[in-house]
Image (tube, rainbow, N blue to C red; front, side, top):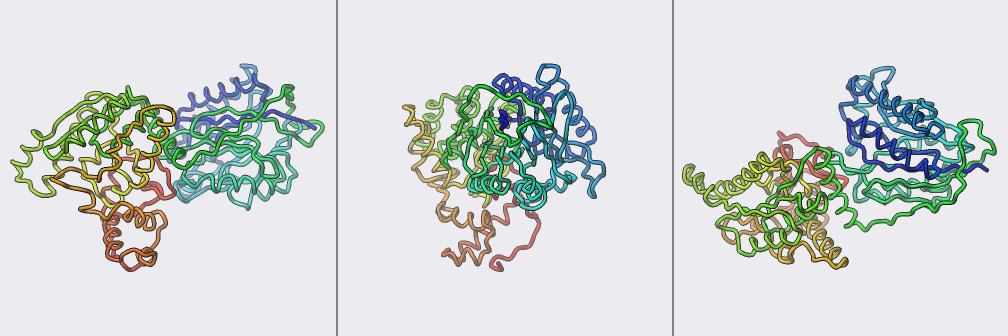
Length: 563
């Protein structure tokens, strides 16, 4: 019986960086080859990064992708790795253009002995949730099966595994030893509840070992968590890579063929123990996803640093700690911008937070900036309140212009949902770490992060009073959020049903909520679409995030209560 060592290269590609991504693959091959691996598997679109969106319609980019694959194959051979099999994901030009302009396949390439030995084009193109692949790709046809050193192996790309028809059914009839699946599958809080049961089901259907390799990293508003794995035909997990960081894991896979009629490979002689990573608790997984999303947005876009307003409240505190965890506190610039309504406690909390995490800290009072606007324009009420937020936004953007910082906007999903924000004020920023995090979850994350620090013997970073005090924008005397909104536990429960579950107003009322309150919240959500359309992107952690997944018209006449 044959035995071949596979390497699962859980990589973090950058969209468009064909040269850099190819070098990362080459490094992974060199490392794993030295440890006896002869089949190296990389994620979906590992050459180009994912998602490429309308870059898939660029003939120049498609050809750059194809040239990158051919160059990588030649480089592997010239560097002494020609006898290895390297599986990559890339864009390939389709023979025919689809209606609507799609002209590329989402492809898998098998590199061996200096050339692209075989290819497979993704057949099932997801067109739901965050995916829009039917718009940009041409579906493939057929299957790919290769014998590699006696291990008869089939190949799939991501969505192909999730549907039982087509390539899954065809491979299940082939008496395979292994099925390799390359993926760029984004994180959400329920992913592992479906991912691993699916892998176990498919392994049983194939009667074969499943090698699942997923991308890792942040790409705009998506976060890929890795979590690559190998499962045997009984559904048992043989290998599981660490989540939220690049990894290179090795495992030996047996084949049923005594001799290799296909690709001859050298079997490894030393024994290895495959790594099996832990299943992260939900709050830790969410925190890691937010940190990774911020880190990669900053680094992949070349920002030297981050700046954000520190109000002493829970949202800015959590954002500051996420930023410090992501890129180091020495690259985070917190700015306290007190008004005449800012409490001493809030100013103290902002200072304490900055001192604890070790970020840069500056105080820029806004009263003298606000007064001329109030006087000249005779502002009162909400207009006078909002000019304070806009003064703060101007300060942060000025500092960004001066020093190159990325401005983080600190609003949470509850506020984004109902429009509890000031356009060009607290919405100012290029990235929104909490955009997909309801307010009640912000508090849970704060308590978790403090407990995690305490368990390591560190000072909890978030001041206790920032967690326990009533939330307030402090734009007028004695203001609290609950002057304008229901309690956040009620608000978030309603928003969860209206937005995440897409329930009708009547269904939410039937679940035990007051009709007037539900209708008011539904109106606020509908009336705030124009704000969300202009807002910064942020890491997606749920299955119904604002942006790619929830797209509604701005101009629409909506009558509550008809659902």
